Image 1: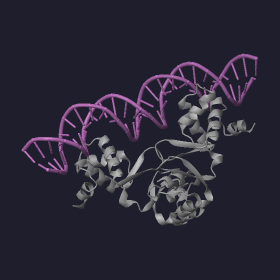
Image 2: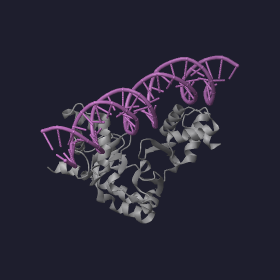
Image 3: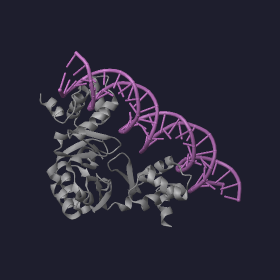
Image 4: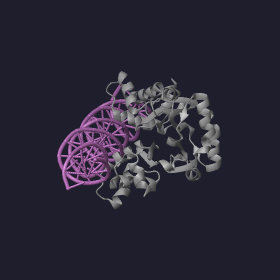
Length: 137
Length: 137
DNA sequence: TAGTAAGTGCGAGATGTTCGCAATTAGTCT
DNA sequence: AGACTAATTGCGAACATCTCGCACTTACTA
């Protein structure tokens, strides 16, 4: 199974906790450490929160997951593969929508050309109001 | 004096603490509650951290200041007047650069047209690497 | 199968932020 | 000017989130 190699190849040990954390991040999409812990506890109730944090950090170091700060306080994590979109964070309902990166291509280009700022598209959060909340208002 | 009316007109009481917090936000540009508290303590040592938090919230409610989450954990505050630029947050040196909003005009337009997402340009944080850090790398 | 270093659990601790409550005080009304 | 009332403050406790140290366990190596 590819997943095992994927972890081993990065020099990581293959623990049930680790696999579960990675699987949870992949299944959940955007999620907080707390949510990930909950998900993991469904199948492995004893798992410790510290372990989740440590694994998220480890997995981030080897590039399998990434985190962003999407408002409020906590960080949210998502799988690295899934980084082909922007995060559109709604300030009202706290939901996170997606949009393909190329919407931002021009914008990123301008920032680079005019300000020398290299935008990290994979670590990108845009605040605003989602279509849903914009209507209701 | 304009500042007093400015607060009174919003239905707020005019306390020394309040004035100092607002002044500090205006002077500091982007700053954390902690930094603001420090600044205020220079002239009013007894001020309590809770008071700073509460005033920032109050001032935000009436639209005089705004906050953004620029990475790490804490929120950073800035005066509402000063919102004519984007925040370019460097992931390496944690510095916050500025760029005029119109760089993003097209981008914002696309998001609105294609996804119905109304970007709040005043609450905008862009992650990446600043010109400085990009060179060093 | 034994050895060892990575990983885990657990509890304590560091931060950053909120809240309840009693005392204070700004603005209002005589 | 003096009194009244509700907003505001200070303070400590309570949270929430995340980090860390340490002893125990366990995945991998040979």
